[in-house]
Image (tube, rainbow, N blue to C red):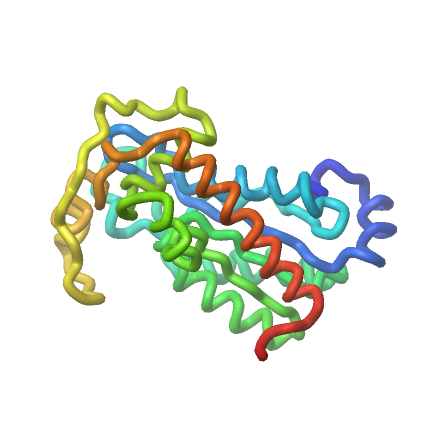
Length: 239
């Protein structure tokens, strides 16, 4: 159920039985020369649409948060970046309002790696209120599953490009798809990271992408995401 499509009275009645909210979170950011700036928005959006079809009577879906932390890619045209601490504070207050409205289970369905620090900071403060918070970074959490479908992964690479081809292939300019073989040797940040590791705002090989691979990714992962939501609602956090 999409929150914004219901009245306040509807929300009050339904929330006596539904206490889980999914918040799709993305970024406006360069993804090579071939993908739209909204790539990290579109993947969580489609996951939410598919999840809504399957378990929409059990979960609320909040409006997406389109902006994120994108320092490394901010050198490329069209990228919008928000400092991690600012984004974390914003997310905390949004989710604090949901919690006060009776939604104790909060799911961050994240489409952008730069947001992870902000989501962790917000989650720490929300847990202190009594909320249960789960962050799903779809390309990272289910990497092994994705690699049964694609040869590789990357920012604007084979997996992300396939995902957007499936979402809306008219948004993808495959003739401009390239590959960037540069791989980070270990977790490190430095000033020229955006120009080197993310050369041309891409990592991996986008030329290997296809709409069919994107469909397989979504069909496989949406069920795994639903499985996690089921466990969360049951209060099963460990074994």
